[in-house]
Amino acid sequence: KTCHPDVDPSPEGRARFDRVTTAYEALRDPKRREAYDGALAVESFASGAEAWIDAVAVPFVRDAVAPAVGDVAKGVGEAAVN
Image (cartoon, rainbow, N blue to C red):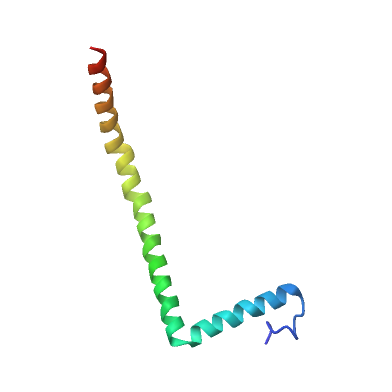
């Protein structure tokens, strides 16, 4: 009841009431709840993948691949000059 516009008639109170009502409607409908839970699972997976990329892939590319590519490019440049 603390979110109801009768209790908090301000525009912010109304906006909060609308958000709470939308969330309640989504969570009480089994199909909408399933869609919401599925979206959370995808978001969680994507977040984990992003963390792995930051922790493993970026340092690997920076420390191992980039220098090797730079050496190859340097060798190609030297060969073109000779």
